Length: 120
View 1 (cartoon, rainbow, N blue to C red):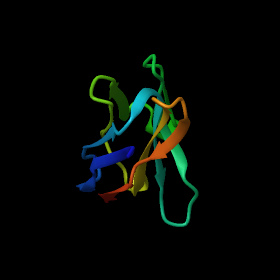
View 2 (view 1 turned 60 degrees about the vertical axis):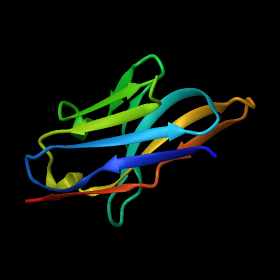
View 3 (view 1 turned 90 degrees about the horizontal axis):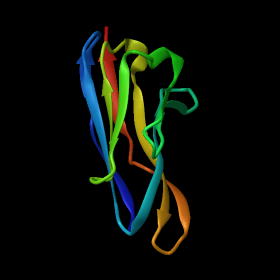
C-alpha cells in the first residue's frame, strides 16, 4: 500500500532551524512533482515549496531564502530545510507527491502532517 511518511518538526525558537522529511513507499513506478504545504489555525492550506522531477524548485514568497526543498529519487524522499524560522511559520506541514504506479494509475498522495511551532 502506498504511503507518504513524514518526520521532523517540533518546537523551535524564532530564528531557529528545522528539517522535515517525507518518504514515499509502496508500488511506485515514478515520482513526479513533490511539494510541501502548510496549514495554520483558521487558514486555508497553502503551498510552501515544490520540486519537479527535474529538480526545478519554486517557493512561496515569504519563505524564499529561508527554506530549501530537495529530493532524493533513489530514496523516494523529499526534505524541507527551514532556517530563520518565524512565529508566522507555525503550522501543520504536509508533504505531497504526484505519483504514477506500476499499474499506470496516477494519484496525488499526502503525508500525515507534522506540527511546526515557532515561539517568539
